[in-house]
Amino acid sequence: MKQIDIIIPVYNEEGNLERLIKTLKETFSPLQNKYAFSYIFINDGSKDKSADMLDEFQKNDDSFTVIHFSRNFGHQIAITAGIDMSTADAAIIMDADMQDPPSVCIDLIKEWEAGYEVVYAQRKTRKDTPFKKWTAFLFYRLLAIFANIHIPKDTGDFRLMDRKVVKALQQFRESNRFMRGLVSYVGFKQTAVQFDRDERFSGKTHYPLAKMLSLALDAITSFSAVPLQLIAQFGWFTTLISSLGILYALVLRIFFPDITVSGWTTLLFSVLFIGGVQLTMLGVLGIYIGRIYKEVQHRPLYIVSAVRSNKSNAQDK
Ligand code: UDP
Ligand code: MG
Image (cartoon, rainbow, N blue to C red; front, side):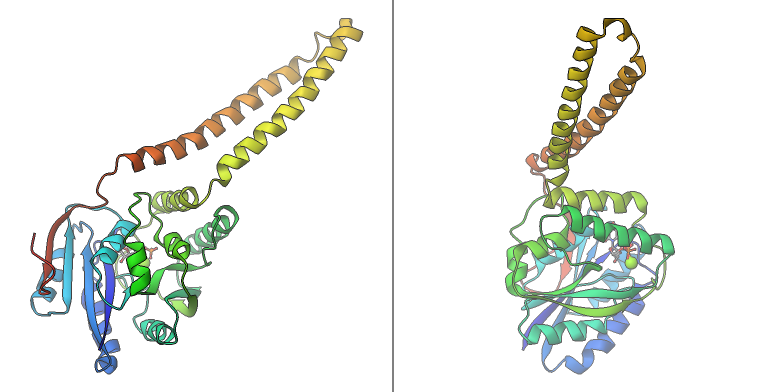
């Protein structure tokens, strides 16, 4: 029988867990003679009842593993911990809030059986606020412009990955993580399955604008040096323009000495402009250096306070 791990990051999802687990069980019960499903829940420092609920579910069900983080480390890191823990023939990553419909997993598994090693779920439609839709739209288009690798549009982290892919991902230990990008990066045979993204069943999103921006920055900086190249190109461009300006000033100074005092406006403009441009560019350099700093610290990606599992290979820490 083939093993499939379902990896689910959980942060304050007390209103969703019961419904989610029930739906998962119902969805997978017709497949139970072909596949053995295990569930890896990562409790990412939840402050509500999620932790206790997960422990309670785990006690009564051998197919559950619960990893408790010592604090909130963020969605991408929680997924990482699930991937690290996975030993099955395939792993499916999905959200805990029912936005990734469990029924889509069936299609993912079908494509996997057809020979694909990564099957990602691509949103045909999404039921979110106009703001979220718009920012998501912009995010994927910006990524397409900036990132050096192909990251499929309108796909979240909802996807199935073959054991080979999971093993490859386990080797990536960078701390600025954008898992979707890494999955594209590792290659293998990839395909998409279309689905309609539902509304959150209960609670509200944990991705406010600031977190979305930081995810976007992680995505761009970990896969692209285009912003740095743009700086250089802009630098050359301004150097060219200013050399022309200098030439112009020299010609005026030499051949028309009586009008050289005027030009104060030009001077002010160029000083202000160059000042602004330089600060912006220093900022971009700063962003990359900050990321280099974070990487060289080599801190562990997450800290586990407890693992609850009935599997022999996991221990209670
Ligand atoms: N999540 C997490 N840690 C966080 C934020 C979110 O583990 O710091 C989980 C959350 O419980 C959910 C998934 O990541 O299962 C996606 O989060 P959310 O639904 O808030 O994001 P959205 O769907 O709005 O993009
Ligand atoms: Mg969600």
